[in-house]
Length: 113
Length: 116
Image 1: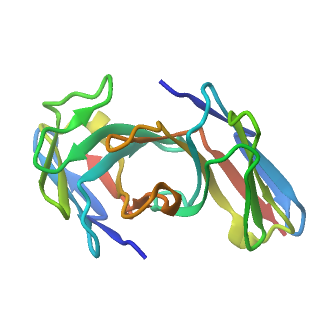
Image 2 (image 1 turned 90 degrees about the horizontal axis):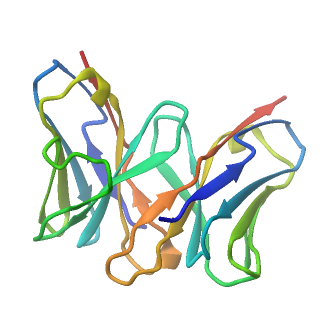
């Protein structure tokens, strides 16, 4: 089965600073998803990457998938309190019609004034 | 966008009783839904894949008889925790996908189960 490892496990960043979260897969990624979760709540879809070298941005969040499709990074620019939460990377197993999404270990982000 | 509704948002039950959690796709049909469990300060663990009109597919280590899944229609999947024990206390969350993979999977708001 596919395993996803995220680093760091937790991150405390001063408001306004940039930060990066990494997600490494034990297997080649077919589809890599980034989600944000406020603890005890549902997940908010951020973006999905599929092609090697692909990069997507939404507001101040940018995600990249490396060429080998085994690692992804999530970068937040000029962090704000609203960015605080748990960031999860998820991988689609690539099957058609029988797919499933499994998640990495998660990164807890705290933004301090 | 796609909306997945999950009820109840929280429930407290006595040991030995059963609890049913509902997951509904409000504005789309979902032949497949997914059930996850999340322990405090941990990531989501996939429990099972719910398939409309057929048996659910459980992940390794998940007890089928303990966590009953029914996907009776294209918009509703239910998870029943049978003979609940305190160790079943957790956050349960469902998800479904409406369109293409690039649209992502939509998640319900989750159910916090406390067994006393």
